[in-house]
Image (tube, rainbow, N blue to C red; front, side):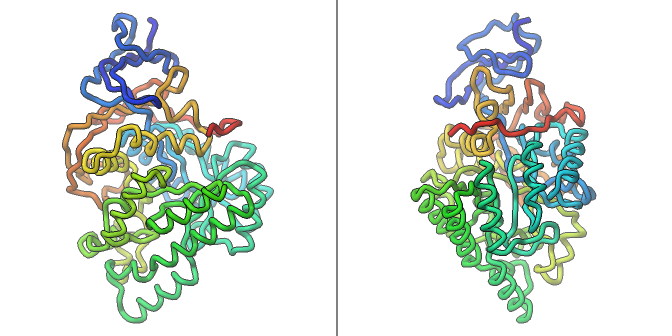
Length: 455
C-alpha cells in the first residue's frame, strides 16, 4: 500500500491557507496533499468531509505533576486529556518533586514520560539559584527551555533580580528560551497580607491581593533584562493588554521576547469568581471583563504569540484548603483538554478569527519558538503526521465527569462549545477517535529541539 492512512475530503489548513484536499500519510510522515487520492492505495481511510484537517495542536505550557504529585495528574492521564483536546505535543513545565533542576532528575522525568505518555512531549528544565552547570547538561540532553518564577512557589524557588540577570546572560549564549512567571513578589506579598488582615478572603477578593501592577511591573522589568542581556524570553500566561504592549515595544527594539496567554484569561473574569469559588484561583489572577476584551484585541492585532492551557491540576481536597480563605487555595485551573476547542469556539466562531490565525496560535508559532518546526506545527509534505481533525459545526457541552484528566473538575463545566475534536493523530497513528483514547501508554515520543530555529 502506498499510504498507511488517508484522510479524505477535509479542509486542510496549510501555511498557504485552507484547501479542500486529501492527505496521504506513510511511516509517520505526510507524504501527499492532493485534490483527490484513490482510497485503494491506503490501508486505512478517515472521511473528514466538512471538517478541518489541522496541524496537531501544541500546548507549550502544561503541568503534569509527575513525579511526586501524581495523586492529581500524571503523564498518562494528562496526555490522554491533551489528546482528547486535539493536542499532539505538550511541553511540560517543572513544578514537581523532585525539581528537575539537575540532569539526574530531568532524565528521571523523561523516563517517566516515555513510559506513560500517549502523545509527544518535551520538557522544560527548572532554572534555580545555583544550577548553571546542570543547565548545561540538560541543554545537551534536549531540554526544550527553562522556567523560573519571580514570586513564591512551593515547588520551584524564586530568583532575585541579580540571579535572573546572571542566568539570562548565561542562556543568551545557548539559544534557548527562559519562560518567566511575571509578578512582583513584594507587591503580591504586601497586598495579599493586607487583604487577609482586613478579612477580605473570599475568592472574589483574591485578585486585589495580586493587583495588575504586580504583573505589569514584572513584565516591564523582565523585558528590560532580556533586551540588555540578549536572552530569549517568554512571558508566561499574560493577562493584561498593557503588558502585551510592553512586550511589543521591546520586540520593536530588537529584543527576542514572546508572550502567551490562556483560555481562562480570554473567557473567565472576576465577576465569575464568586460562583466558581476556589476553582477560579490561579496566578496571575483573573482580571476584569474589560481586560478580557482588551486581551482579545491583542490576539487580533497579532501581538500574542500563542495560546496555552497552563493546565494545573489539584485534587478537590487540595483546592478546598481555601474554602475559608481563598489565599490558601493552591493556584491553578485545568484546561488541557478544553483549551483549543474553547479558543476555536470563542475566537473563530464567536469573534471571526481566521482559521489561519487560529492555526498559528494553536500550533505553528509555538513550534517555531521552541525549535520543533518544520517537523511540527504545519501540514506539509515531509512534516510529521501530527494531525487534528476538528468539526467546526458540532455543538457540545463540557461535562467535567467526562474529561480524561485524573481529577474531574474544571472552571468550564456546563459551558457550550462550538467545534469538536473528532480525531487526534500522532505520528500517523490515531490516538483519539472522538470518544476514547485508543493508544497505549508509552507510545508518545520525547522531543528535543532541532539544531537551528526557523524564523
